[in-house]
Image (cartoon, rainbow, N blue to C red; front, side, top):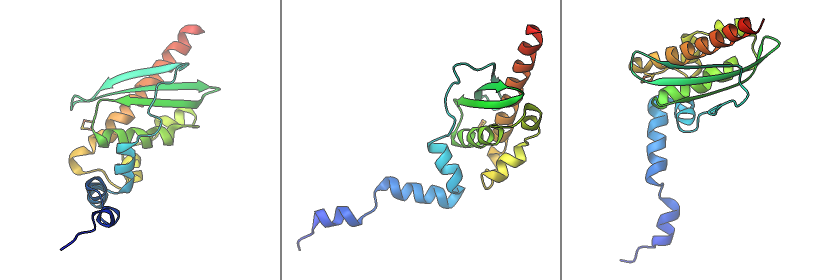
Length: 149
Ligand code: FES
């Protein structure tokens, strides 16, 4: 029997495509997409607020903010954490961008969790790590602002 290998290549999904489909089934599209390709995943070179924070699980998140007229104009983060941490950092930074700093401080881990469609029970703390890291960056901004006065 002859097998048309070229045709077979076109119709068969790649292993990676199948894996991604399974992950999306299990964790949801947003978590998988942001986990693979996080947004705002960069340093902000002219930031005026910065923090590096390590959560109880041992993962660290760095957050940079550029605040102007009390509004977070730019925000970026980096982490050595898992896909859920990258997804949580992506959503949190998206929610915080363009907000006044007081409003950004009101963002809750539950909001981040809901926006992602629900983190797994054993990764709920990833949203808390992101929120705490942002809180520390805002604290750093407030402290340095006070020193300049
Ligand atoms: Fe530690 Fe996600 S596993 S913050």
